[in-house]
Image 1 (cartoon, rainbow, N blue to C red):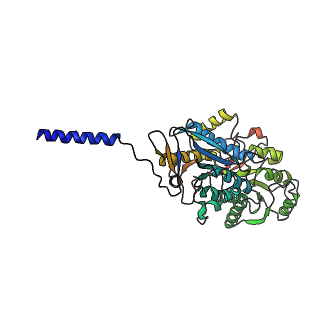
Image 2 (cartoon, rainbow, N blue to C red):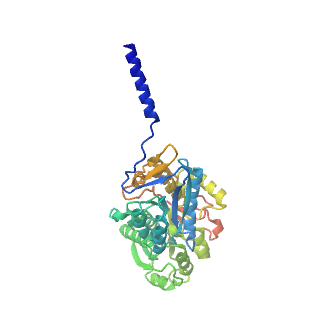
Image 3 (cartoon, rainbow, N blue to C red):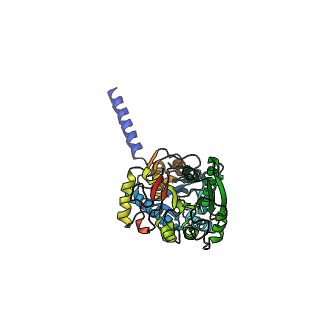
Length: 414
């Protein structure tokens, strides 16, 4: 009997050792839109699609730097692999967004794209990335239609870490009404962002009891704004909201005070021109200008540390409003990759494309610089906080937005 038990014990031991030494089954991809396999010495590839040239380059440079700092905070690595960050200039327009998407989506190893900056560039780009199974998280697209419950099914891979302009437009309207303005006009530049934002502002302002006297439009490259400003002046507004971009925004601001009837009208823009580059474009005419933009004073505690890293790395303060949103977008992607990646003993990673997208949409109470981010089924993930700022010094070198008495622009609401 003892011999029998000993023999059985030996057989169990041998079987256990055999199982332990047997090669593991080769990974089989069951993801419905495929997997990305990253070899032991290969990098994890993350791309950007941002505007990094031309009159609106500060917007893209600002967000690109936010991602770079997020990568540095992880010492440039994720799951034992180097993070490779590269990208394309999408020029902040539809053609550029489409061209960038076609180039980037051809990369079979690309996992995710951070971008675009401009909603006009996003609209044609999103279906291209989604068709390729590439997750896309924007740090600064704010047009409401991109995350509308009725958005196209081909937008399934798209999310954003920034606010929805349904929030921003309404907040600016509430500020204007609260401050006693009863008549307002708007202007957009044909972009999705500007058109939808001014419309949200107009609708909310009318709900509150205000009158919208005019809703005008210009081209993003227009230089003679006086005909449009003359039409606006004829309607006698008290408040003029033009949530456009820097090139056209600077021209409107410089020329507004030269048009009879506009001398005492309060000028106001939004986050698309919230930059020291706007002060350079507008000059002294920017003094007294208002902006709606993210409320930096309401960001999480780590934001001050981020600012210190930014100034140490780049030798200047952030250039536009969405650097922290880009930092959060990058870290959302990194966390989702860590959640879904399957790692072989030799370090090879297998990442399901749909699994990665699903993990991003499952983001809940993510502790970001901009707040606690939770994604809804349509891709809105932000913890939106909007403030109104005023230009108290037209010198671009004085740019230091905040709530302190010495800040410029200075937060004046709420």
